[in-house]
Length: 325
Image: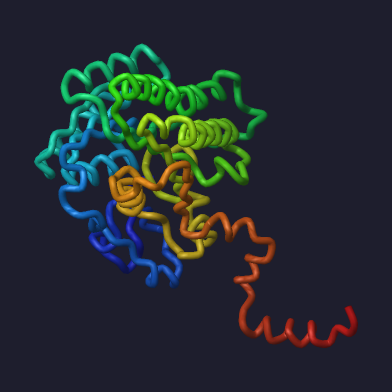
């Protein structure tokens, strides 16, 4: 969800870096919910800290990398594509002056994860922040899915998160070092599910169960675990697969009470807070960041927002005319 796309009538500078589709107009209420681009945490928040971010080369992962780097942290980013990682690392480190280390690894492969973590430890030490952000998803009727397609999403999202968490977690326990773990999941992970993305829903639910379970078990080792459930954020990789025609994006805006998509700076600010020392009492939480989309789409009568004032006048008279129960 990261294409050339701004809100009509507003500059890109005002609305951040999510780069929205040009043909989607925000709702009129969006003027009351303008996003902030600036970092909310003070400079130096992550001085002396090392962060490890999977899927850190693009989209939300890149935004979180940039935020932590701007706040003084050293960041290790990993994904399968080294060229993308290297370009992101150079871009961000050139801007912030802080080191961003690109290390290629397929999180589905425990040996590849181990090799990447070995290199991180050799170069910079053990991390104080671990963000499980790597994901794979696409839309499909479930009856059209092959076993391999289903397994691929589970391997990237759930098994990949387990591979990273177990490898780094065991090293942290042995070193008696604490850390803040964060998983980027989805609004449909825990409460409602979603058709047409069943493998992702299963995998994300598993990731949340893992993080919330370890919040209870591994706090004794100085580790805490939380999740962010982003709603409609436009990043190119995700929406190329989830909305290839762009047909549903306009409806998503209509179904989001604040009348717009989320901006990458917003999720990056929340993530930075949740892994910082300003939130050390926050453990075992899953925070939904969706502009109210889930409550709106779940509420039985919320579509009545389409009724005009004149229609309400007519219906009120009809309702008042009904006698008895």
